[in-house]
Image 1 (cartoon, rainbow, N blue to C red):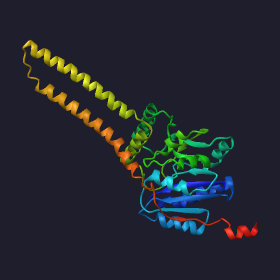
Image 2 (image 1 turned 90 degrees about the horizontal axis):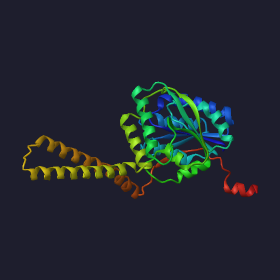
Image 3 (image 1 turned 90 degrees about the vertical axis):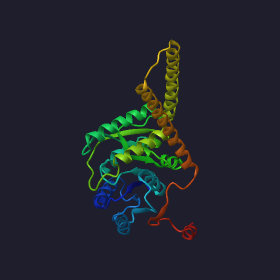
Image 4 (image 1 turned 135 degrees about the vertical axis):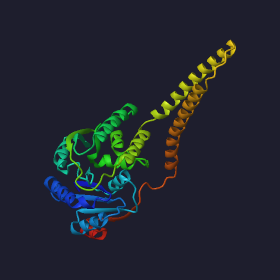
Length: 320
């Protein structure tokens, strides 16, 4: 199969009909009928699952990957990639902020020898000033902290070769930041710029709390800089403490008494607060090690709806 389009869906019933129309049109224009569209239901509470089932019944080019519960966007995407069979795999969000019509130019770039063509946003229409600026700051801060350069102003919207997907599927970590993992894999990668549209329907699945969680996963997955900062802060506080001890001894030798209750409390609170931050940083990394050590499956697929196109073994042998 030439192409798979993988689309994680969580409560996206309002936009699935338009998604179907645009993605099918884009695929047919580029590869004819040689494609599949993998829709992942990530434990939706609306009609998303039933619509995916209906799409599959009406058009066998649709593959339904129905998860047993909500796993989150990154794990749902990982589940969809495990089901995809295409030589090339396009990752697309169900909100249609990233245009599927870029498939043609992406395929042309891949024909030139690239293994990954990722979408890079020029404009982010319909997003708040705070979200735009915080996202920009995050990408730049992240690249200061990691050894592998992660392209700025990108999401998961990309076209990948099957060998990149295979390597990605062999990476077993639970706390996944897929755009960073793809950058870490290497091979030849290039960007295609585009203007991001507003969400077609529904509400964003990445409010501030989830964005912060994703940012934390990205930093802890690709950088030990927070641990180093905690170490250096510890040394700095120890040095300041030594200076304060020398100052206290000097005051005691001089025979002067210092009331100093306010300054003492400020110092105690400062040192205590910094210690709690450092313990929290250590706890984040330790917690991730603990979760990884359980070796549980990172996602659970309840059902895969797929039209079986393989020739049965008995029939194939008879044909031979």
